Image 1 (cartoon, one colour):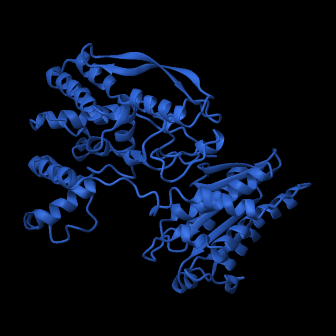
Image 2 (cartoon, helix red, strand yellow):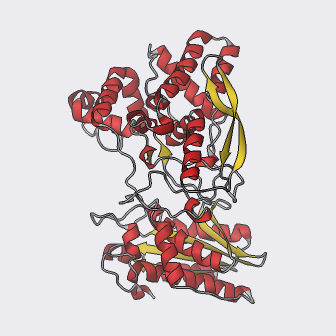
Image 3 (spheres, one colour):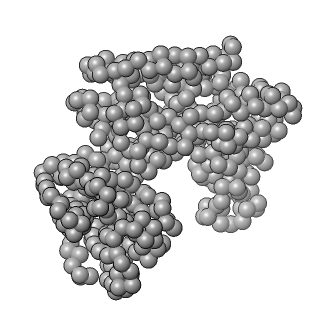
Amino acid sequence: MKFSEFFDVDYTDDLPWFDPLLTIDTKLFIDPFLIFQNEFGPFVGAHNELVEYFNEVFEIMASANNVPRLRRKATNLLKFPEMEELMLGYTAFGTRGGGTGTKKAELIAAGIERAINFSIMDSAHFETIQLLQEGIGPDLISDATGNILRHRFADYTESVCKEHGITAIQRSTYVRGKFNTASGRWEQQHYNLPHNPWNKKPILLCPKDYLRPLPTLNPDDYWGFCCDFDSKSLREEFGDDIKRNVKKEIILEKAIKDFSSVESFVRFIEKIGGTPYDMEKDPKGLIKWYNKTKEFALSNPQELSFSSSNTFNKFIFEICEIFKNYIENQGGWQLIYNDNGRPKSEEASQFSFLGIVTHYCRANNIDLSREVNIGRGPVDFKTSQGSEKKALLELKLASNTKFWNGPKKQLKKYLEAENIDYGVFVVIVHTEKELEKIKDLRKIVNEINSNNDFTIDFIVVEAEFKPASASRLI
């Protein structure tokens, strides 16, 4: 369920704030560079606040000189709890992510220490630290930004609630509410915020203009910049194949040895500007799936009661068939293709599948959990009603290089580990070549079923621009 649904807000796409799902994190992140280039309202002065915070850490680290107390102080300042209130990030299902504990704080500290060793003392864009230290990704950058600017996101959320007449708010207290640079300490703050009924946490809203899948200043784009403007020296140092299969350690090596190139990259990006995620085109399939599948489910209700595991399994299979029909014949394929005709990632298909499964399961009082990791690999969805009726669902693109791990390993192993007797393997096919690739699927599934006490069904979805029947394998 989305924020706007629960709080009865008539949300339109022209509103500036992101309308988050309350039950699952959206894989977008706060990009500090986008804040830097577009400060408004409560965020005026936000970039300078980030700079001052990390300058404080840089100064402590620079004066530490093997003094454990100072090193601990700096590391403690780099511990940023995961911002569950924003409902953003990598978490597969729900809104509990990793955040920045001691180990992750040590990674950031190591990056800052490395910067100091190379006489880099400028934290004007602290996210460039990911160019100096492996293991620092968009989640850490986003959580750091969110924690330091929490009071600004709280002010922004309060203003949105006031504008839309949201009165269901509670007083929320944060021990680490705002950092006082003068004292070098966090101060307690109180905010009046809406709360998420699923995780019982306060809700913080974020401007859409501040969200991206990756920070604007990221290793891949830095390397692309170097390839465009310094390709000759890169080829001399790293070989001719400088744009393919480049490992991050090579990018880091370049950044550390030639930090002036990082500074040039930053100046270049400051000149051309960063771009927020395109919510309208949704190239990664992160946004539109929820509303589109909800509209379809409401227009095509399916209600059953379950007297046995067999009828439960039948209904679960029918939901998968509904998904097949939605993709092939009801325009659902548009959610898993980009405008240029190229298929989106497997994750986009999984989200579309999640939408159909979620809405039909919710309507029929079936519990759903996503990406279960018991057994030898993740299974996409687990459905259940009570303790007796359970089923597992796995979706893969036929183009996935590990496609056969689905029926042979992941789904099979999890059914065994959880003592569940039914699973459905859903295959997305984009081309005739992919259809040919999976021609032995029925044979393999039958062999698995004949040698085990569980049953796996499969469904093939032909996801083409012009929907077609997938009956050729059946």
